[in-house]
Image 1: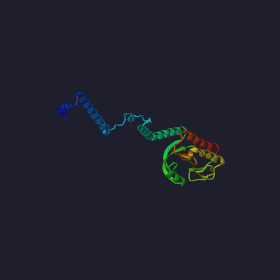
Image 2: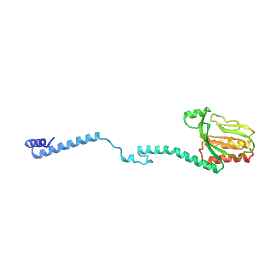
Image 3: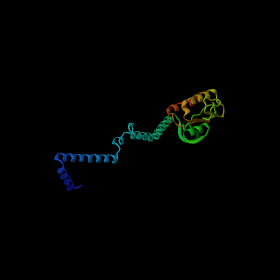
Image 4: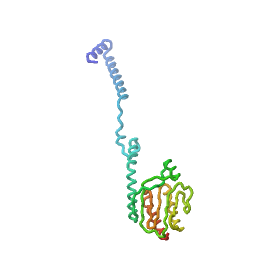
Amino acid sequence: MDMEGIDIIIRSLREKLPIEAVGFVLGAGVLILFIVLAFFLRRYQHVEPPMEAINAPITDDTTFTGRMRARAAKVATMPGKILKDKLKTREAAMAMGFIVDEIERDLPSMEKDKDKEAEAKAGLLERVPCGRYYFPEHVTGGAEWKLLRRPSQSMPAPLLLTPGWVLQIEKGELPHLAIGAINHLIADKHWQKHVVEIEVKRNSIHFYWDEFGGKEKLEAFKTLVEKLNQRSV
């Protein structure tokens, strides 16, 4: 509407209404127009996300964005943390006299996944990477044997007190003291969720494991080696 049209409306109102009433009508019209325009803009305008949510720190769990960023950061750093822990374990092992490398070996799955758990209970193995910790010390006694992790063994195997293990004696005999040392090692609840297997040859002993447990488990390995030798097993 142009200015000429507005002037015509005002003159018409002056002819029929007093000047005070004209002002009131015009003011009311402007107010109604403003309300309608504001409602229209509020309903159809594009809502921008709040800046505080976008800039939320990754540790802020009070906003959805903060929680998502925190979860993503945790997942991204997890593999790096595992690798760092393994490197620390390997460094400690080498300081204790172990020779360390990584190989692939057929091992039972110890994961909580239902399919994996069913495979483990069935005695199925899968080819997976694992740490091989080789202790190049002559094990006295001449016996050669293997300690294998087999969750499918629901009953304790002969000579062992804990279910889920198999002891294969390939050469010579194992005295009761040696069997006691082995039973002491596998009684640790840590091995209910993690894998370790041991092979003893004439001049060496190998530990195959997933490298979870750190220096505490290395101490247990070293103690077993020392017990085997001290008792002339």
